[in-house]
Length: 310
Length: 325
Image (cartoon, rainbow over all chains, first blue to last red; front, side, top):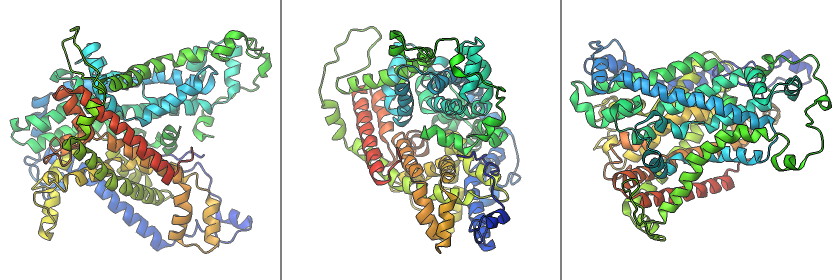
């Protein structure tokens, strides 16, 4: 199907002009006949919905900047009340934002790197190479997505923390996420769309499969790389339960874990706990939101659709 | 297929015909080829991923089944301890436990609220977003932002907004609409609050799924229905809803899996599954039994019961909604 740039307009399917459609022998096309009142209703509904979706974020930013978080509707405005950066200082002293961000970055970065290297290898093999068991590998990639990861939590914890001795290590935190199955499927979808001839030509010129993948296939699927980075980043950056289990030492914990610990146990230590939590929430949310806003035009709904449909 | 890939694709002027390839790929398959396939290198390329799936999926799954049928407990590494086979004892202990029963009931409450709300809101918003208009990118981004934000971060805000003296109560208080005790510590409201929170957080992802699915609904069907005199609502019900049925199947399936996975929200939003277990979930109990109370056998049993229930719900979903594959 056509590609829908998200969240921009959709130029992919050329919409025939009214004249063209009339030339095709149709009466007035129903899609072109949008009553103004209906359009207004739609915008109002969308705007109200968007407001509900954004109010918590507004509150997050405003509350993090107020000396005492103001729970009244007026407090939603960032300028209301006395503005201060003390909350950011307080949360940084309590849980060390720097090391939390660094650990989150290593976690997400390592997962992205492993997913791009091994995920593209697997995706390329699934799309372009005929080998025994190809169908089984693909079925496995789909199955992994449907079985809840949390159910394997305790055995995985025993294996990683006790048998492999990886508790409180970056590798231990990364291991269950190391190769993102969704990304493997996205890579496969993109590699399937490439014309076979290009590969045959490269192979005839004596290129090894690895070389074909690196120099021919990957440069042709740059949009896929970006999608994979976005899809893969969100998971580990926001993950809570697994790193919470395997990291007990504060200096090894990703930011989501240390902030959660602050919420549940440490918030009594600071003068304005709510403000400190909201400041920490801003710091935790900012990188993912920023990455999304920067690349949103390249983020398409069909990628998400294909990744879950297989 | 994709406009984006083709624009970036430098097609070679004339691709040589396939049979000219000198690698012998077209010759009759040798014995080894027949066993490994035409390009056995593919197996090697997929090997790291296979190893990964084996290590974090297959082995733990087998291990979980083993633990569920044995009296498993943690011991010092290398210690030689006896972990006898206990048959269905762990399952019996878990299934007769009121706390476990309550947690499964809680997931049912979650699904009853979350799934219909998700399907209806995501589909309606996707249809509203599926047309060119001003400010479209702003709206789409607005709905998507909660999905890409960490649960821990937005839980922090919800605790503030829905706290006893929070914004929500300030607004609803004068109208007399505030329950006592307040939302997150109220035993009838705690679980519905989690269901609403997760609906709000995940909706953007499902909107995106429906937006993709709407592209597959033939425009001609809308047009001919319109010619036949069908109004807006009628067309939505008779053309759009059946047209996105595979996506609805997926939305129900995925939100069921999310429901089965609930941990962060009850743990943080309602203070460890309170009040008095009213928002506890199987995964929360799985964590408490397996890690905190040294009963991994019971934890594994809870996990397996949950998997069986998720599979059952998926099959029912397939029957009722019907995926296309």
